[in-house]
Length: 90
Image 1 (tube, one colour):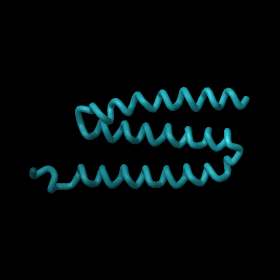
Image 2: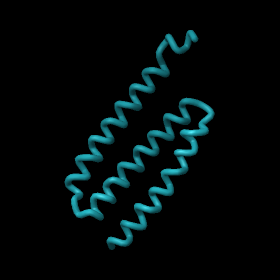
Image 3: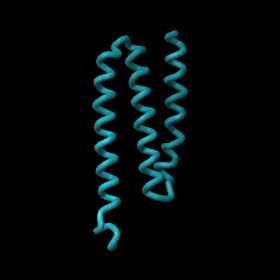
Image 4: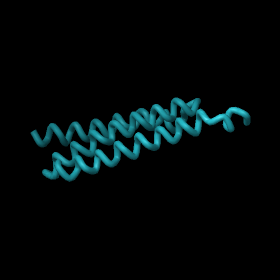
């Protein structure tokens, strides 16, 4: 069972590379924002898998909750910046 989670973590790491391409080459800011949210979601799952592999899932759940809150606040800040009227005037 441990090998299954290890292989899942490796595959998930490879899957994270797909939205990373969209972050780097995204045509619009909205595409980049969606890609960073997708990377954050997959990273949360990856951290939980690593916590299970190390046998300290309780500690890693706390880390993922903090990471999720920071990702959500970051997304809100970027959305607020994009929708500001000063940006539209320029």
